[in-house]
Length: 241
Ligand SMILES: [Zn+2]
Ligand SMILES: [Zn+2]
Ligand SMILES: [Zn+2]
Image (tube, rainbow, N blue to C red; front, side, top):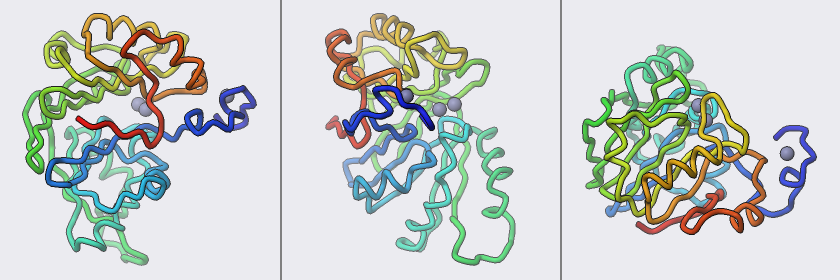
């Protein structure tokens, strides 16, 4: 957190240094599917040597999830193709409004990102590069947003404070759940730690990685306190599914 001198913010431990949330899913054919384009997307790609990007899915249009989009032009240059972008219609409208220069015929200058926008509907299956992707409705305070399930056993559920009844069955029997737990104190638009743990106790995934983490959590101290099968995620972490 900017200006903070707490033990986590001043820690030299790399697992206490957090960029904004995103995941990259690699399909069996090697294609990379990105969920959200956070402001530090470029830094995360450089740090993790990401050389390929094949599609982007958006959960919602808050700044911490969209403000890295401009850097997809690197991949446009490499492939000569527009980047497929999938989101709910309201989010696509926000992208058109916020990134006017991408969608208006203005001078190209150093290059503009090229994107093809495709609307998503919750619970309508999308298959990309052989990977089944199921968008699921969850609520971020009053804002409806999307969670994503990849194949039968993994779901990414961030920026969530309420899981509607229709989504619950899709989140049962998971091998891996990534779940929002923004801080220790209750929050209007995110699960706090106890709400996340209550949800995990009901869903019983084999393993849970908590994400969208603030400076409330020292990595080692918190992991030692968490129940079996629940861990904090960390930047650059990779998981085989
Ligand atoms: Zn701090
Ligand atoms: Zn948000
Ligand atoms: Zn967020």
